[in-house]
Amino acid sequence: MPTIQLPFEALLEATETLSRAERDTLARHLEGVEENQERAWTRRIDSILLQQIGDCVPLPGDLERLRELRLLVNDGTISPREHAEYLRIITRVEFLGVQRLKLVIELAKLRDVSPAQLADEMKLFPSQ
Image (cartoon, rainbow, N blue to C red):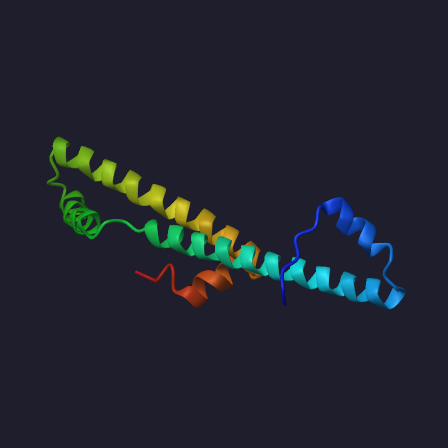
């Protein structure tokens, strides 16, 4: 279909010459355009949220070090320096978990599903 450039005012005036059937067709077309734009926007937001959810994962080194330090805590042999490191890592991991959960809630709203259902379907929070 060829593209015709008209000033907006001329376009509005042109609609006044349309028959009722033509106006109905135009209205349906505009609704379709709006729906397509909304779907494209939703897909883009969905993609961004998925990327951000994927970014909110603790570093493997943090998780391994956390396991090591947890053993020291359980044994009662952790030094003050190690304990401070342990608390820093826990804070980072918990912060990422909270951020991830907030993003999952937003994505669930966008997809009109429960956060629990979405997290389960995506296996975002595997049992430990």
